[in-house]
Image (cartoon, rainbow, N blue to C red; front, top):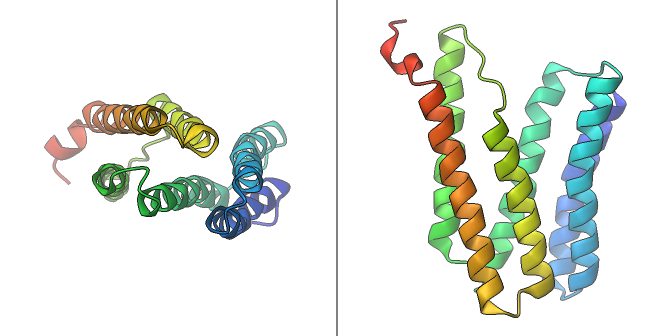
Length: 173
């Protein structure tokens, strides 16, 4: 567990309350800076884990969890600020729970569902869209466009996961 990659992931998790405190206090540019640093740690910890052979079961668990917590925290902030509809957050939450459920069923059937490219694109697109909302959120059309990007990539990746792993539901245990 005690690898540099995992420590960087934990740092990302610790940056989430810092980001939220800054955002709620109205320090938008500082909040954006912390959010960007947190997003960049996702790239750094993945690179270090793969390049220096630090891939671990703990890392496989906490890295995507850190991404989800960061993104959901930002989305909750934007919902509360009236810049994103609550139903959009509900769609994202539904996709996350559904894919997690799919992975649990797969594990019961002795199969691991690796992260798909569509999921990586969804995470990247969501982080960029949320960043745009932080910078240009006073323009309603930016909020609408960013929410649309988040929803489109979220729904697409959810469908992609279920389509590519549909045999999990047809094979008997």
